[in-house]
Image (cartoon, rainbow, N blue to C red; front, side, top):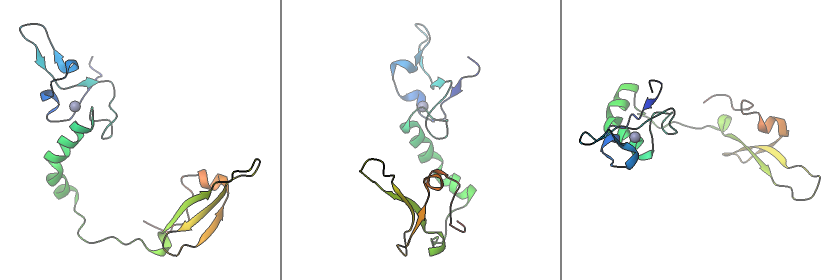
Length: 126
Ligand SMILES: [Zn+2]
């Protein structure tokens, strides 16, 4: 039991689902969910509601702590390249892969390997 993780949702124990009800009469309580793994919020929350509860409770503090965006960021032509492809229907013909610049609309050809390589980019920065 010790390697189970507790849901970090501050209200998790207040949601009266059957799986949260633990203990024996007359000492039953609704308890924070614990599982070997969770799927939400980087593995910290049992569901979207618990994740939202945490965000709603802590978002102001977290933004003040980690720093707020105070100016609009700019995506320039140099960094506006995304990967895309044209679907080819006929047999034996592979898709046409390309970089698309979302600002200039310029296209540059890509190989399938380059398309699938998530680290391959021609963007020069953020
Ligand atoms: Zn929860």
